[in-house]
Length: 189
Image (cartoon, rainbow, N blue to C red; front, side):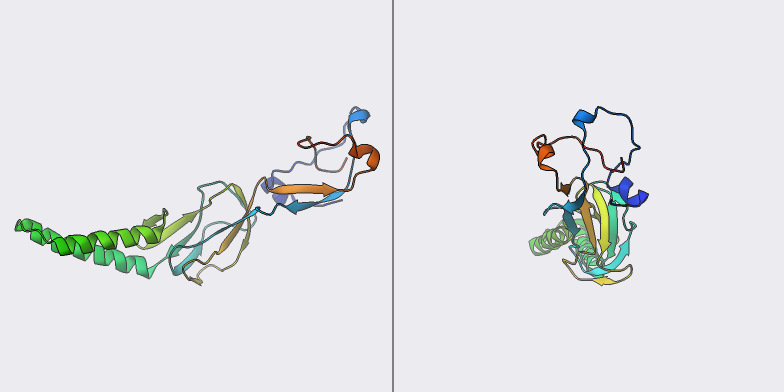
């Protein structure tokens, strides 16, 4: 018998049912173990260095696009400051109706570098928000709230919702009845 807390059952979308009268010819009971498929775990890496703030709780269920954590990055603040300074300098040239190709190129390079750093994440005032790439269960935190992250660190690991399989030893007489994608119920019968 496998005993899982109700929080874990809900997060893994598992249901426990009570025994009911059923057609015994089509039902059999077996014991086994749950295993994660090889691609079950998804880690979320930060594209910048900075201070970590975790937004989710362990074993909570998240949907694709839900915010997982933020990183407060001094590097992004500095890049934003540099971009603003270049924009002010270019505005001064525009006011006197003069073009400065060198400054325009430098501004475009700085904007492209910043965009590459935030890597399709949301950023505001040097704080980047990273979201879940998949539906799943927050399995673990590899870093703690407030810790410093380096670029590429993965502080959160998510287990995909449907990347769980059940392996069981089945009596040979019942094995012939089994085929892929059969429906099943998990619980005590």
